[in-house]
Image (cartoon, rainbow over all chains, first blue to last red):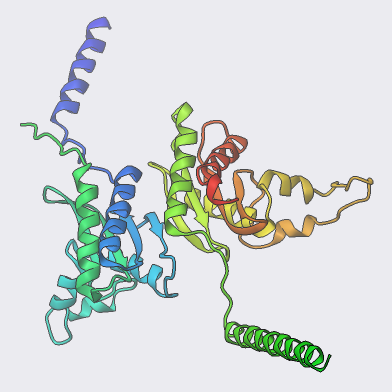
Length: 168
Length: 184
């Protein structure tokens, strides 16, 4: 009996080792989200603007939300949709806007709920992995300006991420 | 004598002209300012300082909290979901902030004030329990109003601290304390 139980333990240990490793994803933390918001605010200060910012995780759930002092009513919801778009398609929302133009192959993607073909959403990249997204609405430079602000935020968040060490 | 009378009359006339002019200017300023309201409101920078103060206040026991700061309208100015917290937890923080803002008191005080058996100092029933049925309110402590000069310009709400709702409220108070010198 003793031996059989040992055999079972060895077998289960071997099974654990051979099983595919759980996908170790870098998590977006609230600290990274805060760093992103601070970076967007710094961008806005140089820009002389007053944007609204949303940071989403990979599920599309809000981690951070910041409404500008004199935000227009649509700004905060739009910032969320831009971030949602960037997270969903794993690219800047301004790039997705261009590839989903009516008449193009991907035009039907515009019919999905919550996405928006406007610039200002940028994915937070750690290596090749998307761990969330930043959406900005209300800078001075229009969609390009919002994209630049969101990029500053995404870079600041990614800088705090610890890259997973490759194990082979 | 005639000179004196004329002098007094001139002075009186001058005083009248100056007074009337002053009144006219005041009236013009009033009219030009009647067109819109301007209210104090919690700013982005203040809201972030409040949130950071609350997080710092909760660090003592390694609590991971969610924080919401609402503006004078009760709308979210700033929201941060703690690591591992659900979106519902973050929304509860918002509701605490909203409740504190709209009733201009700590949520724990408001809960006592609106309890079924609540009585005033004279022992008379308060009968405000119905307030607890208002949407966006929450009957869990953890919210503190942000008051400037007697004017509620916002509210802060906290969820997720290890010590429970009353500890949440202490963290929220630490957040307000972070901008105390701007609220005089």
